[in-house]
Amino acid sequence: MENTTNTDTVFKTYFDQTLERCGWNDEMQKGIIFFLGASIISLNTDQILSRFKDEIRIQEELHHLIRLYAKPNEAYDPFNEIETTPISSAILTYNHIVLHQLIGKENQIEKFVKQNPDATSIVSDASILEDWTKEFVNAKYTLSATHKLNKMFFEYIGQYLKALQLDNTQCYVAGINFYQKYQTIDFEGTNFLNLTIIDSLSPIFKTLMHYPILYTYHPQELNSNHLFSSILQFFYMNANTDIAKYIHNYHHNLFYKPNTRNLRKEWNFEKEKRGIILSQIVHNAINIRKTVIGNYRSHFLQSDNYIMNELKDQAITRDEFKAGITHLIENFYEMKIEDVIENYTHAEFLQTCAILYYETAAHAMLVKEFKSN
Image (tube, rainbow, N blue to C red; front, side, top):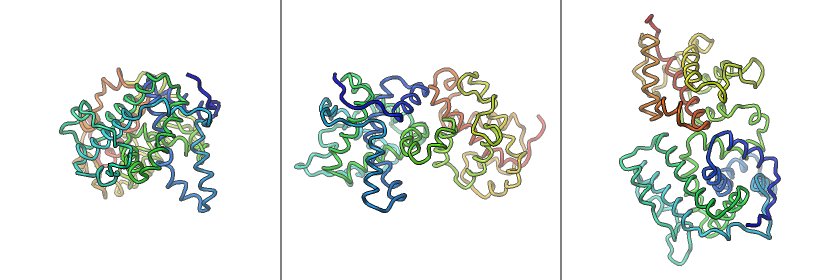
């Protein structure tokens, strides 16, 4: 299939290399890239509006973001290669699972998406994929559930696009054109469906979807941050924001060399054995209490937004605390340590590291004292 789009953008190279480092297979990458194009307006419009007031400048900035990964050529539209029903069905099913099954809200899709039979909405020809819904019977809205759904969604779309022999650039441009077609027909409904997906992305996928705007307006921070740190920052958004600033400050001291954005040598996430990294994170995150942040323990105690509130002002051994953290990771987040070590992609491993660091540091500040074993 001829590709007449311009693939030679610096951001495309940067983003594709990031996806490779994440360890995603080809299908996952294509699905992620398609949705990067399909969601880039829905995700970033509010941020652009907050930065610029002039209408012409706003349109210029959005135009720049759209063309950051690939610059479409009017002579070729990969969207013409796509029968959209499979993708529309994936979007409809995703929204149904999140809104109806995980959150328990009725009639949200019908409320926001056009139901006029004379109008073609994004889901007018779609159907709910029952093999997906069966996977989430009695499930709750948790990071584990949404991450599982994220992966199903991206891989399903990527498999379809790969079968059509679309390359990454064509997948991205098809995503842009998919969005533009349906937002013209039903602006509110199309953005509602997109934002449901965006809002329920797990930290690693939310990080990746924000790469275009980070690359454009915060390039130094993006380039200097390890992917682990970026994932950690997006995890904070759905965590305890009252204490996140303290944990983030300690993270800089723990993982990076002083006054640099270079990781300390002991944090070689790519080459060191995963079990060793996980053990190091727990061991070192506990020591947040020994830093100046320990003086702000009362700030931590004021909040009840913890998974293990029962640790407040308790005296326990370090071994008991570590066992509790392991139980939290394996049961609340449903991340079995053995699977993390043996089976997770690199991106999922980094996501686990970020969550493990945060939960260990946060809960360590609740404990009154660590008794001798």
